[in-house]
Amino acid sequence: MSWTPICKKPAPDEPAPNLIDETVMRAGFSWENARAELAGLPNGGLNIAYEAVDRQVEAGLGKTVALRWLGKNGERREYTYADLAHLSNRFANLLERLGIGKGDRVCTLAGRIPELYVTALGTLKVGAVFCPLFSAFGPEPVRVRVAKSRARLLVTTSLLYQRKILPQREQLPDLEHVLLADGDDDSNVRSFHTLMEAESDRRAPPTTLPEDWALLHFTSGTTGAPKGAVHVHDAVAAHRLTGRWVLDLRPGDVFWCTADPGWVTGVSYGIIAPLTNGVTLVVDEAEFDARRWYAILARERVNVWYTAPTAIRMLMKVGADAAHGHDLSALRFMASVGEPLNPEGVIWGLETLGQPFHDTWWQTETGAIMIANTRDRDIRPGSMGQPLPGVEAAIVRRRSDGGVDLLESGEEGELALRTGWPSMFRGYLEDEARYRQCFAADWYLSGDLATRDADGYFWFLGRSGDVIKTSGHLIGPFEVENVLLEHPAVAEAGMIGKPDDYAGQIVKVFVALKPDHAPDDALRRELLGFARNRLGPAVAPRELEFMSDLPKTRSGKIMRRLLRAQELGLPPGDLSTLENNDGNES
Ligand code: WT7
Image (cartoon, rainbow, N blue to C red; front, side):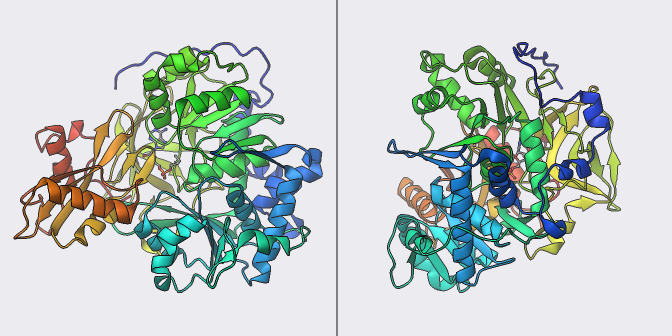
């Protein structure tokens, strides 16, 4: 591992009340103490939405702005904690009227609109399970996830409904109710707002218990269909604590998490962590635009910003000039997640925005940040940071007998976490076998390859399977290849991530055609269009290359490792320079 200098941060000009003496914090830490900070409910109950809004109203934050929504056409709407408490009560009452309750799944398929946030909180209040779907998914990933979730109710918009649900609604027999955030009652859809108006905004406190299911996040593995990671209400202990410790959220702060709630970051840190910490959450409906983003940081006086390397790279590309003239003096802390944040990104933040980006590491399965560069320690640019209190991380090698060997600092292996933190997923929906594969003894195996230096900082090396990250989104080969195989001309398909300066990786597919099909440009365009229509822009391949045959193992498994080697112009055997290898399924 190459040595990278430590990034000394500018001395804070104010004390850091969140940061208790480090040694005391780490030595005296217990998740029980963290849980004790939550309000809780009678009879040992716990509810994420109650902690996020009602508790804050009781604590006197009723008039504080909880959600500041910036519409893509320049609208601006503010919801106080009291507003969110009332609206989520209404939605919970509405669900109850429709017979939806404990354990039932409620999906959203929408952009960053206020109705999504109300749906999330109201769903949690009745003890149903909130399952967000990314609005840029095409019809195929949407159908697979709604079907697998067995959602009984979906909140969406007219356009997304017409394009992605209506044409395949017969294939979704569990889906009884579709509510449109922007539409009127119709024979098979209802108006979200009309239904909401009929409900009371009062309701008794929730009756959920800490181990009741709360959230369902789909994620992809190397093989098979997407997996539904289940999280419980107990996770809120980790969301709240990491919001405070890692993101340094303090009462009165304005916080902007740029992640979409269609993915886990947009829920854990785009809804739960900020609201349970009583801050004002900024939500921008629009897509990335450098000038718009700088204007938001400045105009909204954002104090804490949580974003992703893809966005940072795009800002770097636009250049420092775009930041000039914007008053970013309110910015106090910036963090990044989702893909490797290179040292240049960290330093660029410091030089251009006045703060370094603090890299953080976690996964859909871990539910909350596990490893981070925290405010109190110097950053090692290029490192993900150190495990948080209450988190024990190690670099391990799986043994053939099912156990693991713990490796020394400097050795490369799989990043593992000792089980037992509150936001750890409790299962993959209807997939016990794959859940069990994630564990060896009492270690959770992340599927990431990493190393730890002598001072306890962790360094990301790559993935052990064939999943890739494109613009921060985790994509598995199964869904992409399967869609291509549906095309009559395609015999074989293999997906890889091709390195890209901005997206990190882009989705690239190699395709072998059936006899009688000519590999020409017209067919290439047709296949790319075919995939895009079904998968949506976030998942669809951007490049397609024809091959007469795909490399396969003797059992017929496509060897994506060799496709990657070919793409990078490497000798096929040279694993050390490849990001991924043929490790375990993850
Ligand atoms: C995978 C998890 C992170 C929560 C939202 C995405 C990669 C995550 C980092 C980082 C390098 C990172 C890992 C991880 N990843 N953070 N700081 N540096 N890689 O959750 O979609 O489940 O993705 O994202 O490969 O396993 P996810």
